[in-house]
Amino acid sequence: PSPPATVPRLPAMSAPPLPEMPKMPNPSTGARGLAVALIAAGGVYLAANQVIFNVDGGYRAVMFNKISGVSDKVYNEGTHFRIPFLDVPVIYDVRAKPRSIQSLTRSIQ
Image (cartoon, rainbow, N blue to C red; front, side, top):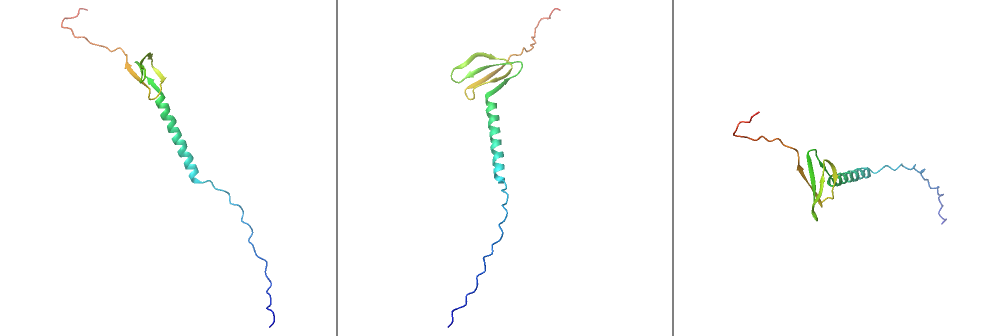
């Protein structure tokens, strides 16, 4: 028999390359960043809230230290710093209060 006829091969067809798609930001990274920022802000707020204390007008404070006891310094009105978990401010009312004294005798005016 005669040799089989060869079929001519066609060149392989390839599709043109697709353009690169721009990378979209991952939505979870934005939410994660916001959560980290909120937690950090909350931590700063709590730390600042533990470090300072206020003495209002008409009050005075003394500091009680859990190691050394009561200090001699008297804190006037205003904002003051303390060491958290070690210093405890004890605030006293020092305003003059009116008193009425009852008497059985009549006062002479």
